[in-house]
Length: 351
Image (cartoon, rainbow, N blue to C red):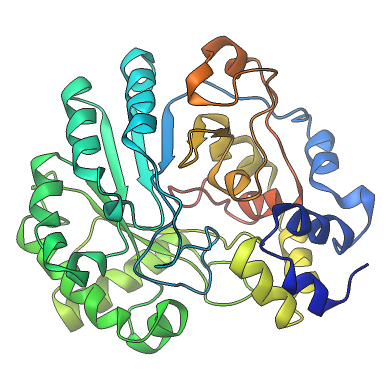
């Protein structure tokens, strides 16, 4: 096994991350994710009806968050081209059961063709749900982004935004100095055009990730606490709060190794394995699309370069609905993060 220093030096390599997850995984082979699924009759893990397209529009971001599983930041050059977006649109147009397009990044708004893409989705599928995972501070990062709330409203976009806590200290510790203040300003701008306001039909949801090596608390209780604090202190409104478990990959994996919390955190995930949550993992009704058009079972597999398990339909350019429906979902030990406790998906708790 490599030393901690050597592991951290090569952690940006997906193969090295997978090696860490397998070699340092507590409990041995009998405690791997495959065997847990096998014991409850879920292996191989199979997809259900495809409903959600989650599209990574690039890894460029105006923030460098400590927990980011994408390893996004201002220096990242990976960006989805308009040609690849057109391949996305071709599939969106012809897949009848697809009911949601979930745009993520990085900061998806930093893609120069972001607005063209959203307008195009709305044009070809007027009733489809469009989600944009907005980090909030992008709205204030540059004058060219200041009108994003109006653009979102025009296209009936559902806005999902990460807010680690309702205080500056915890938020800034995870996302960078000054992020909380800018996030509150951005939330107010969204509220001003109707987002999160009762009866507006404009949905604004917040996302909570724990700041350390522990599982999130009760989603409903945290939502109530966030709602009261944000309303009382800042007159900010939102619709729902999603709790998402930190997955042990990328920057969060590096944090776990540096802080010597990896084994303890994995033990928590294993001991909290929930068979009910396992049946509802997001990879079963979702396809994740990389900035370069390659296909993955989920956003986390994308970051580990674990492409879909098909013989030929691994890229948008050779999309094959039948082959994707017949595939088995690629799993590894990081998947324990989605099945721990109440479960975790991009839409929050699952059970």
